[in-house]
Length: 164
Image (cartoon, rainbow, N blue to C red; front, side, top):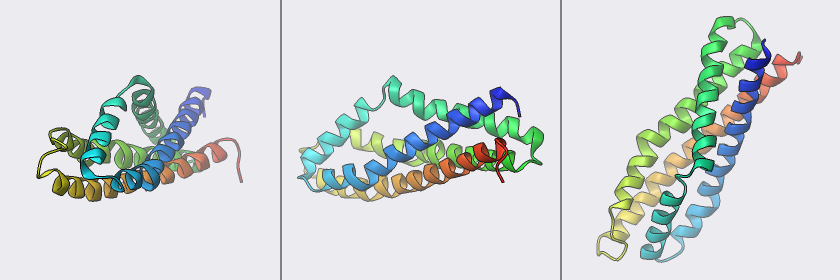
């Protein structure tokens, strides 16, 4: 395996692990805290989070990991016969589908719906309950996907370096 491939593999692993930590924190702490406060305040807080998170630090890790995973998957197909490449392809694919795919298909549309809500409107509490349930469920999916991706990519790094 080339040094460049190993570099992308390590970057994909680190990024996936960082995203797993972020998603897991939201699922287990942030969303529970937001659900414990009155809906108008929870909505306003989540609306602010959704605006603030779209910054270079998050986008570089989130999308950069996606790019690294695409490289790992595409380059991995060239030498699928090795255990390391098999784990790398699996890890990269799980990140792309379970993190980026779920985010684009489910979490972002829910964020867009929440952005249109006036926190003080009469309908806001009903929308907030719907949002909390659906958004958090899909975030659990992202948490598990990025955790699995990280484990698979760690195995790829291990086998790439002559593991058992």
